[in-house]
Length: 358
Image (cartoon, rainbow, N blue to C red):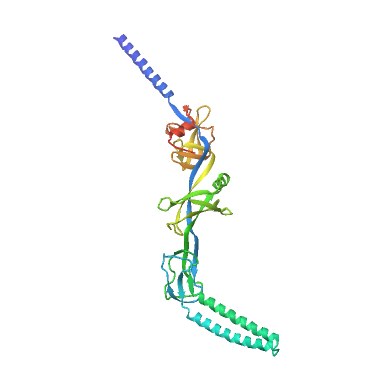
């Protein structure tokens, strides 16, 4: 009986040892997927907050003092160049014109009489010159009075759209008072700020005019493409940005002065390092990867991101193309742990993400 018990215990011990060996062997066989950054030239679409301005946007102000007698247009109305918009009561200026014309007629008669006398050598040439000067001054006063009278009518200087009235009919306006603003929305200037590094990429690799797109405030793309035509001369030392200006056609008048939106601009990146997003983790809003050294030991390393696309990051700093990074199982490992891994080619890894990077 004792012999039987000993044999049973022995078999149990051997079976337990066999299970432990199998578990150890199983643990040893755990292998992690590892890859490297994919290095290639690519294009990234960046978004920039933008301000939309009319190609012409001006203030219309009263040129003379008086009562606003008539308003011939309405707020939001499209007007044509030369169209009458406002009329300031012209009675005073009409009276001034009549007075200056009467004085000019009187001086004209006086000048002609003096000229006849001068031709007969009755008066001196100096007296004739003085009379001529008085006559020229009187004509200038007439022209000035006509100008003041013309300033009582305000006409549209170009085709555009009226803004809100700042005064009402019958108001007393002074010279320089703001009446309204006028915008030419046939084309729009869209301003956006670009960081220095992206500006350098743009200037280095751009060939010819750069087309951009506008994402409007309702997250819909404006149906017409714009062209970057102007870059300001100086960087803003506080922000490190420089202002770009893109011109957009606006044939249907959808865009208005003062709107906001986002510019979508394609930026070329030479020898960009591309990694899957799932190979990264965050600590205190900083991004890290696990880098595998030549001995199979993993260590975390902080990286900075140049651009984010669906399922992938483009790395600015922290990695080079020969680094090996842990692709999966980031929560199953610990810092300075030695792992068994299987290396996968980065091109194959990226391709299996279903992405296309050109």
